[in-house]
Length: 474
Image (tube, rainbow, N blue to C red):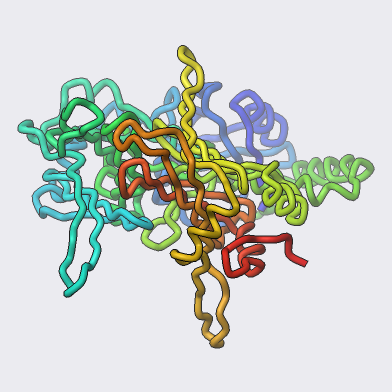
């Protein structure tokens, strides 16, 4: 099914040139005012078609009848758009965002996110807890925990007055997404901020298929956190409705006696294809692949309710060939970057791990978390597990995680000792073969774990020797 993605001016030109005009009858109506800020896309889905239930609102009676110069007729169903917003927003008299979330708070339900070291627990309307459990000798369980926020005295169900006029947004997968914020304070005192209590903002985002999952937890500044929750409860409010794509679709269905798509349009598309033919080269497939990967990484809808939740902080590495990429990565000339919130991380294999923050006014603040020394790593590997295996269904073992030690970082103010980090390189399959996720954990003061996960790493883990040292595969 061919789609035309257009701005309003081009859309009107197409509808004016291919489709001659609008006719009345039934729910047919004139074209609504269109904003140049809102892109549209014309689809020709045929008669066997159901309107989308998520995203921009559609109604069966919101259509226009278009007739081509060849007397072909089409019923074009329009999204309810007015100056870039849904028409229903003006007349919405339903529950407020806080009232829509009320069942979540009254049920005292909790959401969890399990990461390599920490587990995050969000008990809605009560508290946010970050904890790690370790079994000691005699099966005694030692719990390390921090409260990132407790519910403030103010009820989460009462909406602030400004929420009626100002809806904050957050960049999710390259798309500015509206959210409903709930503040939580009075958390565990923070030693790095003169024992001020930790605090968090819980951002509730509409997603029709979600089950109140924790999408991400980020420390935006020292001991201040942002927690993103995906929930279907907000989706009934027009201002928070989920949009799988920033492009608005117009669905034009052929009426009896008319082809699926206008004849003139079919000819125009064929001419465009013919014009492209002389310019095709051997590298076309590579160029298409690069564009497709970039587009899918930005516009692919969030996948929820499974282990394929979007990982905030995932980036896409350069479209080099696998052999080039592996060689440059293992030589330390290609570095991985990642992280969300205040701190970002740079990992150069066999060189160093840096933690940095960039600010327009003060510039770049960088901390050396650890530097590579082969002899120190080998000494560390003798006492720790440098290779972890995964047992496959056929009984074969494959290397799943390789750990490397980087010491001699910048001296830590809290311990007066150099920072150090254990880098865990993990094979992680992904829809995008060149995706990489980088995240940092701090189980002990200034002793870190840097997780680096990517499909590229899957190709080199089996080359690890007994010390976990990697080499270019044959």
